[in-house]
Image (cartoon, rainbow, N blue to C red; front, side):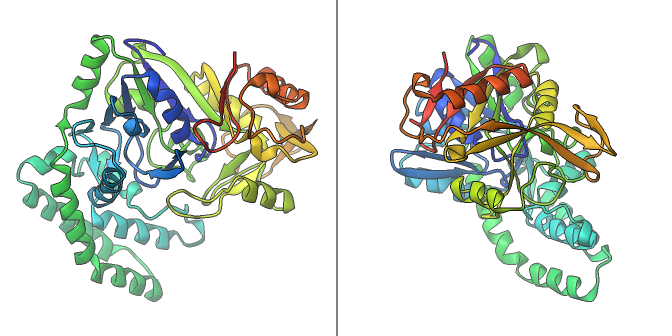
Length: 434
């Protein structure tokens, strides 16, 4: 933790690495927790005191009673989904309205953005990206094309701005070339738009009850006053719009640089960069995944790890850890410390595999190439499993030799220390290494 600095915590794989739990473990040391990008498709699951919580847009520091939580300008916010999430937290006894601050510059996901999302995916046919249909991509499209609605717009002449944006979306939707069946499905979505819109506008009114702030000024003033800030990202590095497995990526910068643009802080304010990874690898939706397992081992990892989307419930694709992709992620993020999640999922395996290189067109490479869609074959190194239930361990001194060997192997390959290891979903099942 660095006073007057921003420490950044982000995922290094294809998302779902367990960022929510780690933020919750780390937040007691920080004064401020800020979310810098992404939308409500990114579910952070936290479990403690016998309760399970799924956060979509709200920073994970909300469970610590004395923290300031900031939704930054890089986030896209759906007022109706935000309202559901916030009210559920309030009902469980967590006070939000004074501690949760929302950037005026965060963009709003409109109901018509979700229809646009469905239309674009239908139009792509077999080449669809596999979005969650939450309207996130079209919202970022509006942002870049300078036609988006922002949270600050709800404070003045909102009805007029909303009507104009909605009309523009409907014109686009009606102009998209779809077959008869696709158009019928889309028209069904449009006929219920008024119901969605009604709740969405209720969400806008609900939003007005929160501090709506110039978050870039707030966060820099906090830093100037010596406060410590933890920034949390959503999704994972390999879904970054610039550096991920394009076009099967999200619509924002998920890497460390996204914390600067998504919160309005200078690069010189970045302190530690915590990179989170699983002891294996998962991916949701379409797109290349070099180490994916299609056999019983993959199914076993999915079942043991409960690998289903926190928001969507979708099955996650599972595979062995990919050190080629991880080295790339560590490089583009400037990771200073690694955090390994779900080590316990591999407790029962006789052997563990790790991808140390790719074979592409018959040639072995140890770097992440421009295109991993075709012709990539993982080169594995096999290590002995530890065959020990580690879920009750409270110290690294209890780790079996084989697990310590696995950690040492990873640290040598990745040239970065592994500081925290998770051995179960609960807050207490977290071991900080000396």
